[in-house]
Image (cartoon, rainbow, N blue to C red):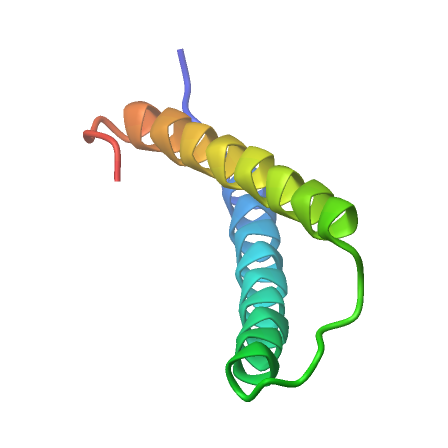
Length: 80
């Protein structure tokens, strides 16, 4: 049984980098919203909309942890 080839690993690397860039951008947006809220400035969107975004983020974080655990298992390491 052979392992992943260079093209597959390269694609996974690129997708992982893209995911990291997206996450950094999301963190920056949330940081700005937090600073607005701390400063007493209203943050747009209702509670229901923010609850939906939070639920989406929780699902995405869990999916990322699962993908990382599968990758770690393939590489013969414990979950990262």
